[in-house]
Amino acid sequence: MNELKLNNKRTILVGLAFLSISAFWQMYDNLVPLILRETFHMDESLTGMIMAADNILALFLLPLFGGLSDRCRETRLGRRTPFILAGTGAAVVLMDLLPILDNSYAAQAAPFKLVSFVIVLGLLLIAMGTYRSPAVALMPDVTPKPLRSKGNAIINLMGAVGGVIYLGVSVILYPAEKTRGLEHVNYQPLFLIVAGIMAVSVMVLLLTIREPKLALENQALEKKHPEWNLAKDDGSGSEVLPGPVKRSLIFLLASIALWYAGYNGVTTWFSTYVSQVMGEGIGGTATCLMVATVGAIVSYIPIGIVASRVGRRRTIMAGAALLASCFMAGFLLTRHSHAITPVMYVAFDRDFATVSGLHVKFITYTMTVLTAICIVLTIRLVGIMLLMSMLALPQIIAETFCKRYPTLMAGSVVVSLFCCVGGLFLSACINVPCSALIVVIMVAAYIIASLVRSFRSSRINR
Image (cartoon, rainbow, N blue to C red; front, side, top):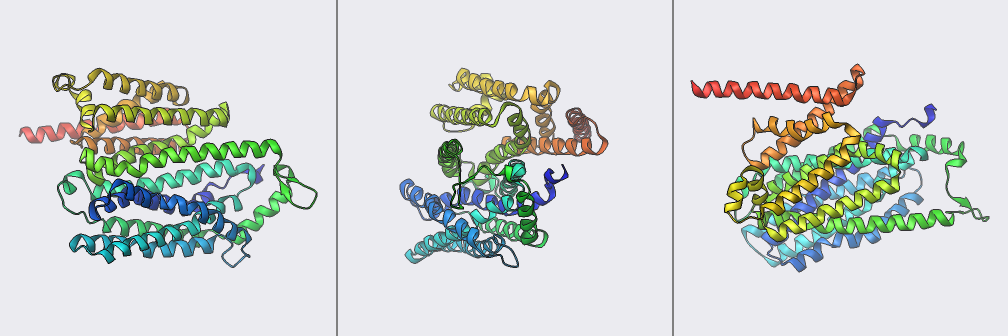
C-alpha cells in the first residue's frame, strides 16, 4: 500500500517546470497583444496572426521535442531535464530582449526594430516549444500510473500558482491609475520578474529532483504491476491500445482541442478588451484574471473529489457546460454594455443605474443565475455554513482596507485564499474539520478588521 502513496512534495517540485511555463504564457497572452497594437500599431488581423503563431508552432514542436526526449539516451541529468534547462535558458534571454525593442521602437520608430521584435518573438516561441512536452512528461516518468491523475492535479495547481504570481505582480506594478493616459507603458520590470521566476523555478527543480534515479525506481515498480498497463502486445513486440480505449482517447483529445480553442480565443484578446474598451490597462486585466485563476486553485482539489464520486466524464461535461455558459453570459453582457461599471452600479446603487438607463433587470437576473449556479455546485461539497461565509466575509473584510472596486476584488480573493489555506493547514495540524476552522478564521479576521476600522474612525474623529 505504501508503494501507491503519492509523494506530494516531489510532485510539487516537479511541477515547478510547469509553474514557470504557465507564468510565461500568462504574461505572453496579456502583454504581447498590447505591445503589438499600442507600440507597433498593428490591426486586429495582423495581431491575431502573430498571436496564433505559438499554436501553429506547437503543432510541430511539441510532438517533435516530446519524441526526441522519449528517444534521448539517459544522461547524468536524465532525459527530460536537459531539454528543460536549455529551453528555459534560451527563453529567459530572448524574452528580456522584447521590452528593450518595444521601448526603443516607442522612442524612435524604425522598420528594423519591428522586424527584430518579430524575429525575437519567433525564436522565443521556438525556445518555449522545445521544453514544454519534456516538462509535462517528467511527472509521468517519476510517478506510478495509478497515481498520475492525482499528480496531474498537483501539476495543474502549480501552473495556476505561476499564473497568480504573475497576475499579482501586475496588479501591484501597473494599477489602472498609473497607466491610464500614458502614451507608452514600459513593461520591462514584468518581463524581468517573470524571467527570474522561470530561472529560479528550474534551478530548484534541478537541485531537488534526481530524474535518472527516480525514473529507474518508477520503471522497476511498474514492471511488478503489468496490470497497470492499458496497452496490449500486438504479437510483434509492440504495444497498441485496445479499440475502445483508443476511441475514448480520440474523443477526449478532440474535446480538449475544442476547449482550448474557445478558452484561448477569449484570453488572447482579454487584455486588449480591458485596456481599450474598459480603460483599465494591464492592472485591470490582471485583477480580473487573478480572480479566475485563484478560483481555479481553490477548486482543483474539490473538483477532484467530486470527479471521484460522480465520475470524470460527468465532471468534465459539467465543467465544459459551465464554461460555455460563462462565455455566453460574457457575450450577452458586453453586447449590452462596453464597460464593467454597469455591473458595479447595479450592485451598489440600483436607483442610479435605473436613472442612467442601464439594463438593471437583465444584469440582476444574470448575476443571480451565476450566483445560484455557484451555490448549487458548491453547497454539497463545502456545506452551507462555509459557503455563506465565503460569499460574504471576504468582501466585508477587504472593504476595510480597499476603497476602489479592482482592489476590493483582489483583496477579497487574497483574504479568501489566506483563510482557506490557513484553515486547511491548521485542520491537518490539530485534526479538526477544515470547514468549521475556515469559518472560525474568517470570523476572527472580520473581528480584527472591525477593530481596525473602529480605531481608524476614532482617530479621525479626534
